[in-house]
Image (tube, rainbow, N blue to C red; front, side, top):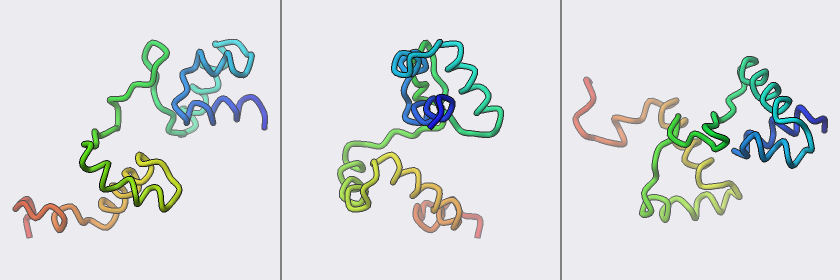
Length: 109
């Protein structure tokens, strides 16, 4: 795997750019260039603020109670809880199930 792909893979894992540079023994500017180019090409790579992932953009908080219910499902699939939650939300949106699930009167039907 080349350095560019390794940078992108680590960025997807939410590793801060300065840590990526240290791990791969390359210049921080190189890491930033690779990440910027990947974003321009349409890749969804987390944003980082002051070297740390920006955890507020595009993420929802999952309560401890909800996490406890979802964790066994994630474990059975061998995926992280955040991946399961993301898949669930995507499927709910794709199948237009929000009103059916919430049943809170928000439906215009």
